Length: 498
Ligand code: HEM
Image (cartoon, rainbow, N blue to C red; front, side, top):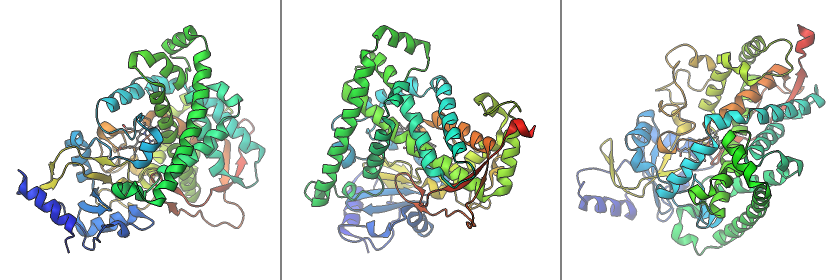
């Protein structure tokens, strides 16, 4: 039952040069106007996996007015993010992002082109380098220490670990963006509110994104754009204040600090590069907003799932605890980053967490720039591309006992060398190719240090009367656990034990 849209596409293509190539298969049941949107439901990552089982690893879905290529196997992901990366490295337009950022976008929402390359280079060469991530070691130590102290205060009682881990993640990103003095003024809470608002508006399958023409008129869009404008005002007010305060510091100090790669924050670095890169103040703010939005939720989600999986799998927890405690000298109150080097099981646990619970289950949508031939199918220019990384990293064709939490699979066996750095396409929680997450090292440093310390300093128990942890997810651009993680920490005193 081909819709008129399908017929139009077919005829457009058959009149083109590549008239021999078919479009990828499409599920039947596409409706006028909404297309396949009604098949998505509340859990699109699941719905898309089930549809792919019937229709193939490359499948074309029409969501509203927009054609979407759904990518559901390691092989298909490799075709899109390696072989044809240059075709698919753009982003679709986003009504919400356009209202939010007006003409100046940061990195994540910019279409492929000169501006994206420039901003992306700024971020990868100056804000998120290995060296820069290392320079935040003291910041991580301070923030972890604070978090551990907070937990100690409530030892042996039930505490809301979701809230604690979220605050930790938020505080650390705030400190990287804007330094210590920011904290003293208690702005973190304000940022937390703004980021939560931001994520809610940019989340999930936003109806507006699929009806670009309708979107200009309908009431829902007007309500949403009202909210987005309010959000934009709040971001600008806060960031303007911070940037002004930084600019007022002696400019000589700023440049010296930046050269020395001391713990200069992102605002310092951007100010020191403003002339070289010809950065406007709006572009600076847009880049900073991207750092907050991309860095906070994702790291929090990873730490929370990891802790939840550890408590649900006591033998894994025991093995990790033994590793962390063995590799940390007896007289230390905390695990330092130097101690992490030999903790291979910790690293395997973080991988396994990202395999089963990739924080961005469908990555961030890509878009094709020109017509291309993928596995013998014609993919027209301007096709939106959704990579179901969640389904691919649970695909039994690539993984044994794919649904189980087994960190050892990264230590022995057939998947031992598999990593998330963008060259193993069965496992791409950070994406791959030109659009791969530039914050990977920043995120890993955060997650490893925090997790090691949570496990070193405490034994973890479920609240009395609780048998298990509910792992139900709430879908979105980032997907998190539905229930808050309530646990009881029992302090473990290393100095006394030894
Ligand atoms: C566990 C934590 C994280 C995960 C799982 C994650 C995952 C991702 C994914 C899947 C993408 C999209 C890739 C694609 O388009 O194919 C992305 C993009 C991005 N991430 Fe991350 N991320 C994490 C942490 C961070 C952090 C801490 C930062 C910065 C401080 C960051 C900054 C960005 C930026 C700026 C982009 C946009 C890149 C572009 O469009 O060129 N991420 N991330």
